[in-house]
Image 1 (cartoon, one colour):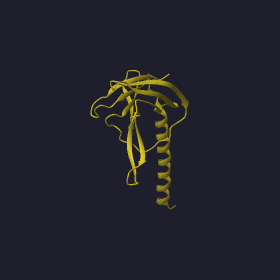
Image 2: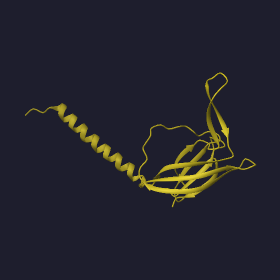
Image 3: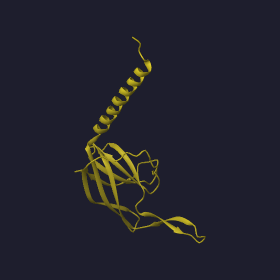
Image 4: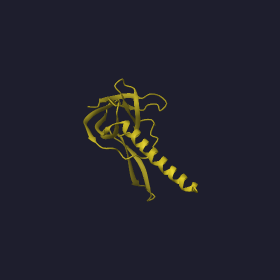
Length: 161
């Protein structure tokens, strides 16, 4: 009896691939709260003394999973917001960064007839956060980044209910 090693190798590779994919899927599901997504809607206001105030407008939790994106934007810069998932003991689970909602980018036509960008400062605005809930997430904290190398100023902490 002659063994075709090429077919054996292909067969074993396929088995390994399916097992690995199933293992990754089970790991991915284990880290989340039964595939729940949280939508948090906030209003943000800058006071006369340039203090930032954020108020939770509403919180919605729905079943589902967010589409995974490989693109990671580096937004840990001065003025932006840092959104932190915290566990029951206020330990950090996950962090995302948000563009400053009080700075709106606007495209316009300059004097030479070319498109250009500028930012318009606002005193108040609204913003939304959409997150895949991790199983241990108990709170969502929002900080303003004053120095990208240090912890920002905590503006609001929202209990996930």
